[in-house]
Length: 398
Image 1 (tube, helix red, strand yellow):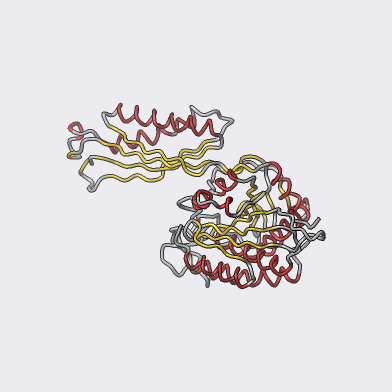
Image 2 (cartoon, rainbow, N blue to C red):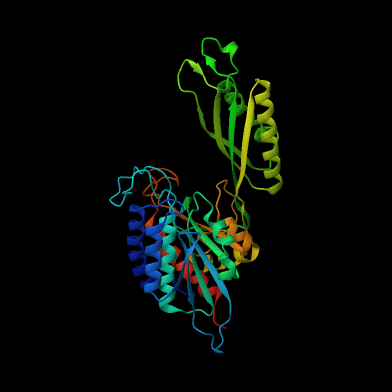
């Protein structure tokens, strides 16, 4: 079983760091990962891995079959490993030599690192093939925006590439480098979006009594919406309502006709998700009416919660403990309210979403989605060795 200090893993990791920094310098947004997809496909093919492209547009799957079992028969077992490829529409401020070369785009969530880790594992496994069965390397577009995972599943990902289990890794800016978190149950929240169009009657700012002010109404709606969490949700449950944009008006002395407010809603339980949506709509509508306004609400269900299934969790824990030791394995941890479209894959096939710490105390960094964030290349060997170890564990020749 490979280790983080294995000479071949170390050599591949050094090369993977170069791939990662190249991807970081050339970030691509959701469903536009053309250059990244080309680079991934070219490397997989160079190692003799079968590549299928055009799934969810820029998505692709690399398929690698191991050596036959001693009996001469392939076990028929299969495992899926997933990495996301897209960047965010953000301006980078790191000043790194390999910083984004594209204005307004940045790998601020570490997807460049996730892709590099999975590529490194693919290279190692293609060289050794010390397993019996099939590995599907799933390189997914559009995790940040558009639900590329959902599109891949709808386009027949697991019908075309059957998997007994599917696994994903995300870097973790809350835990030390090399520490794995493999928790059971819900690990990421469902993520929904809400758009509120508040319609009133505009007019002169000096004569507000002759208007129906949507700006004032928006302010009351923003405050009232928080009561859904603070006063209408069980304190032992979890929900987040964040109204993050407010747009309205064109001049300081004109009360506008309308204001638009948009935001996101995060929940962990399906029942809470249903209740928060209904309550938000009721509170927003009533608050608008109390101010003589009308509210048009568009509520869109986004990514479901990520739920780690018991069996793949136990298998991932076993591989992580064997590689890193029990002292670098966190078995239980509260879920994050961040959304993740790995949920679509884990809803289709028993799955486990793993966190891999990247915090170096000697080099304080930033959290994901911050313009100063950068993936920690020091964890590449750990990620590559974990993927390879997991495959050799789950597809061990019998």
